Length: 426
Image (cartoon, rainbow, N blue to C red; front, side, top):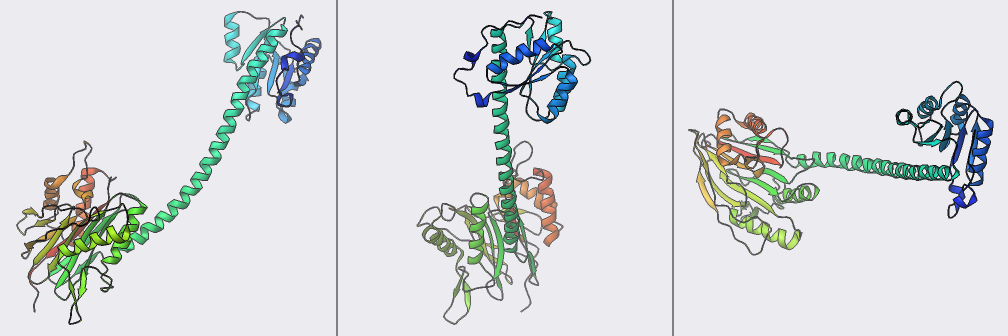
């Protein structure tokens, strides 16, 4: 068996770091062939292991897998291709570059070897320059494979850290969601001859919508629907602060209320409330966020409603006969510019009429084709829920809205539903 030994000496490793040279296993049933190849590789600085058959090589690889293998194709017992396949199954960590030694030159045989898992071939007799070139090619492949493995390991580690961070944030957001939902402590109240029901469904963990009501005095109640710009934590924090400004439990902190000379609280006119909020946001909060609002001061006895609309969807009144009217002329959002002014408008509720304040998460909900629900679509939904009241109305409305837009909403959905049954006895 001939082996050319020229041009594969110590010069082939010039410029390389010998400490980084690969471990090579030479597998051949010919002792002379092994010694020649081992000598060449050792002079080039490689750490070389010999094996006289595939079975011996597999045994050695169990405890010390090589980086490169140079194996004869034709050997007693297990052939080179069978050895390659067995080695691939055994070594599941780093990739092993496999070179077959063969006297076969037919394309079909070479293709069979590649299909069997070999990476490259050396024909006998082995030329030293070709051996060096094949080893160098294997080095490049292994270098890229090791680099990719290291990067994947780093990526996996980074992803694990990010996942842990995400899980921590997710847990915090779940708690934040509970806290935000607690801002709307009372979802329904019966005033005797009138009822109010609230809906609040954020599109994510937390949202920028806020709804609520508070008593002004024995015969009047304030209703509000707020939508803070943006989504997520910043919007949620702003809704929490706004909830404090409209607290029903602490009238001294509620900026919608003013203490009169006789020591009782009365409500600011709705347009003045919008202006006061605007000053607070621009001067005190100093945030880039702004919000839209619909606010109504409702007389529970007479049914008179005084409202302000600040960039919010038009309040809707569903009359007792089913007709739906949309009120207001728009107005600026709150917190954009100062000074700014808003105009109040009035409406009269009759027994059986219902007032609905809603965020644009309802009117701008889109179907599968991207068509928004709009006011016409909302009128259809209100007609579908006409026979229901209170929490049942809200549940039915959400069911119809989900049927229109799907279960996933792109924006927070909220609303205030006020039902006027008739004048209270005095």
